[in-house]
Amino acid sequence: MTDHDYHIPVMLSPCIEGLAIDPNGVYVDLTFGGGGHSKEILKRLEKGHLYGFDQDTDAESNVPEDERFTFVQANFRDFKKYLRLYGILQVDGILADLGISSHQIDEPIRGFSTRFDGELDMRMSQSAQLTAKEVLNTYDESHLHKIFGIYGEIKNAKTLAQAVVAERALHPFNTTENFKKVLNRFAPRGKEFKYFAQVFQALRIEVNDEMGALEEMLRQTVEVLKPGGRLVIMSYHSLEDRLVKNFINKGKFQGEVEKDFFGNLIRPLEPVHRKAITADAEEIQQNNRARSAKLRIAKKL
Image (cartoon, rainbow, N blue to C red; front, side, top):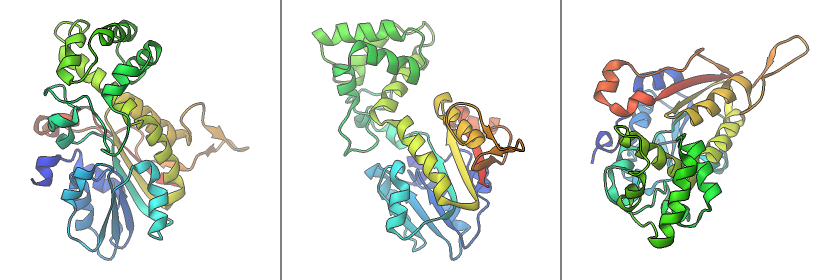
């Protein structure tokens, strides 16, 4: 399996340009996956070093044989701690592509895809405890309502939560097809696939605590980046993008940006571009997963 079979990297050139690579610098790819972004970074390094993180054991099969590269199997919410184990306190650039890899979606056994029948799993790390099956079969109605409404951004979240609780009393949920039979009753006609995708997204975010992990990771980037260092983050849905945008623009996730006595903004990062970068039509045609991607680049002040 090649890295491109595993996952076609989205907006590869803008990501690499955004890092403004110093050939002798230290870089971190927080979402190694198929290694597409990492391999491009390595092409531009001389005496520099790259640390690649991924919590998914499947990603390890894509690790390049290169003494300038170190693979760390860990969730990116712990990246500062792991870098310290390697004696790295500050780096020149950090990259994170928050999208789920094509490989994970295309593996029926992982339960991420609406296209295949598989176990309701959805764990990014196979060592994690919580699965989508457990969420659907044990969470109470109000908790399910919140997940579907906030993480899935679906309009009939309350009705769906009620239906899940009623259905599981008779038939516990085990497989994706099992669950989709219930979803079919509530999906808007002609928009079934989008509805399924939104509900599956909500479950995946809950199972992997993706919002909590993202907040923890973003806070650490400020401590780990050198002054002038670059942060390059690509997100695929509005919840993630809002967190990233607020953190870059305000230095926090909510509320207004703070100012000093002279009216200057108090924030640790500065956006390199005013607006998010999106994929062009040609890339979207070649790789459909690029259509929802938003790339934000920041520099540490």
